[in-house]
Length: 101
Image 1 (tube, rainbow, N blue to C red):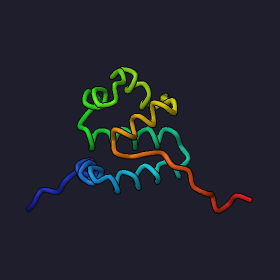
Image 2: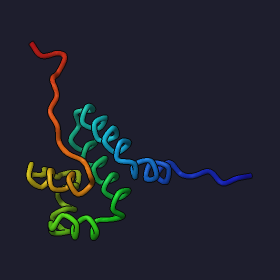
Image 3: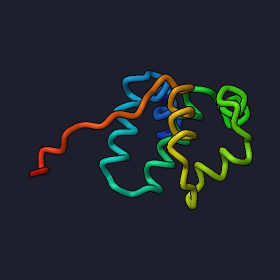
């Protein structure tokens, strides 16, 4: 019987694709829970760069600050979030909400 891949392995493989990573992060944002988005961002960073040390080197941000920023209690500044997303090959965007007046 062939071994099956774990969910986490499949997720990491999928998130290496920038389009998949963007959709994953957008879905996390739509959830409306900051913790869900930060977990998704950690997963994308892990999949695309391979860990916090590499992410810290690529962004020029302190590794401990990155851990704090992406933790359950994290509250990243816009500039740090933008820098992180840029290194991951992504960017922030704003779109019209169909529910707005």
